[in-house]
Every structure is written in C-alpha cells, then in structure tokens.
Image (cartoon, rainbow, N blue to C red; front, top):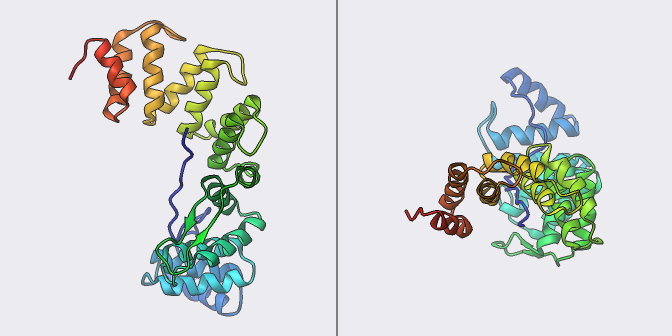
Length: 276
C-alpha cells in the first residue's frame, strides 16, 4: 500500500485564519510591526492568500520569516514550504529542512508528518534549486515522526504509521498496533485507512477475521473512490463474503475499479462475461 502524499502549498496551514476586513488588516499590521509573532504569521498568510491585500508571496515570506525567527511553528513550517517551492524566496532545500524540523520539534503536527514522509521515502527536496537537500531513507526515523503527529490526531500520520507496523518497517511488525492506527484514521474518514482496516478484518490480521466488518470498511473506502476497496467489495459480493451473493452488485463495484484501471477488476468483469 502506498502512503499518502499531502501536496504542500506555500500558504498551507493547519488552522485557517478568519477572513479580515480592511480595518482588521490595519490593526493586524500594527500589531505585526510591533513584534507580535502571531500577527506577523497572519500577515504572511493574508499576503499568501490575497486576503484584503494584493497577493504577494515575497511579502508573505518576509512576514513568515519575522514570525519564524520568534519561534512561531506555523510560520516556520510555511516558510519552509516556501523554500521548497521557491515562492517568495530562492528555493533552498537545506533551509526548508531546518525550518520544518524546527516546527516539528515545536510540536507542529503538519511538520512532523512531512518529516515522517520524507524519511519514509528518502527524498530530495527543492530539487530544481541550486541548493537541493537529500534526506536518507530511514523507516525508524519516519516512524518516530509519524508517531508524534499521529498522537496529536493527524489522520495521515496515523495511517502511515499503521502501514509501518503492518510491514515491520522501522518498528517491530505488529498487526494489532497497525489495526489500532488504521482505525483511528479510518474513523476520521481517510479512505486508505478504511481500506487497510477492511483488509485486516478480511484476512484476520491484528483482529479476528470478520468478513462483515471487512465489507463495512471496504464500502466506506469504495464510496470515496478507492479502487482497491472497490475491487475487494466486488469480490465480497461475487462470492458472498460478509454479504449475500449479488452478481449485479459485484459487477457494479468491479466496473468502478476497472474505470480506474485496476486490472484485477477488469479480469473479474471478463470472467463474469462483461467484455466492454
């Protein structure tokens, strides 16, 4: 199973500030000029999003930098992302890594997740810049950062931590622990976690085998467009695992997966006599 990559934009934040009016912006700017780190961060956000000011990534980065220098973790994270993309600043992988690490060490869950992702994949950040930064793959370090974010309720970190426990990557293989983290993410609505939890129930890994529960979780993921879950749900309907046999329902879910290019689903449809 593949981990989920959350695409980062320079204006990405965990909690979106409320829209401001002109008077509010003037007050905010005054507070920022006086050295208020949160106001400086918000000014950066407003410039990044073009809220009540003309969008200006250079100004956004400048305000993020002022807030980051005072230890504002959200600003450190956003400025780090700017250094990856080269928006408002010259791209620089080392600066990006340092800033996002500072945010992660301060407890910022988005930064913790990103570090976990980087270490799990072994990536080079700011690849198009003159200063790319290579991160050596380490599942052990990935698990450490995923856990920090997962314990704060980050669903993406929870499912990825579950995957590491399922595969025994960076941690001792523990299917029960994998189920624990899959469930937390699945209950937040993440399709990959729902599919993964369905697999655990279907194969009896980390939980007692229960096809009815497997179908329940496959269904939730399938409705969100997860092709693997759609295929597996089709299998359940075709063979009556956890549900009454229903060839029409099986073909429905196989078709949805086939449209997304899942060869297993295409083969299943052919087996059932559907060739188009």
